[in-house]
Picture 1 (cartoon, one colour):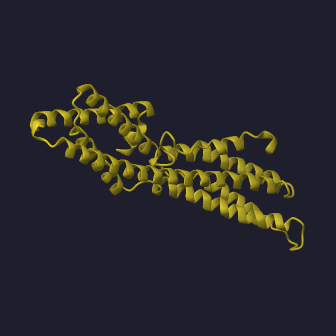
Picture 2 (cartoon, helix red, strand yellow; picture 1 turned 60 degrees about the horizontal axis):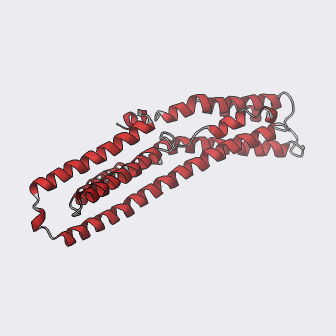
Picture 3 (cartoon, one colour; picture 1 turned 30 degrees about the vertical axis):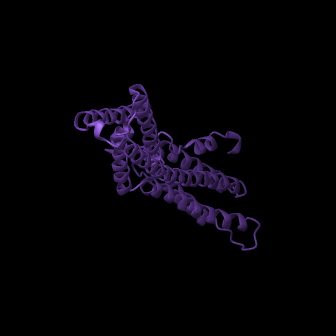
Length: 261
């Protein structure tokens, strides 16, 4: 189901969610008109209850979206840190002796290429391809094979720093893989959100306006706003899959800086 939702173009997904919400409101309104006698209803009480339900729903979905935005920011920070570590390693590699210097830079280029062309498309599809781990292994092997013999050598600090940065890069890489699967709302929260949405929509159908046009305008506004909020939540729920998800632009920009390499 998740794969199907994220395979839909964002504009069509937004339209589909709004149409579904409006159909629910239309169906609920028809049921209220058919089975409820408005003349025997305490409209003040009903309007008050509907307003309370709507307010509680607004608070609930606000917290849900806030949590998802926070998760998205965490994933973005992780990707930014990962790209920064590659940049730092490339800078440190400039102080390595030949041919280790050029080999390290080529390995880092391969890492970026694997992240952009293999891992990121896999993340967009919900996968966990770890193709970029191989360049990391090669980089660590290269460093171990070029360990400074003299502990007082000038380049020993560079070597030590690169070893630490390589370990940090591996950790950030694994964090990205972990976030792609686990940094999203649980099924329980989604069930609560769906039920709360239905309750709010149904309660809105009991809201009373003597002016029929005002009533229609109110329901339409509620439907459109609710649909947009649900679309936003769907788009950011999985940090690497949705329309507003994390992209590989930082890695791409780093790779395209020819003068940097």
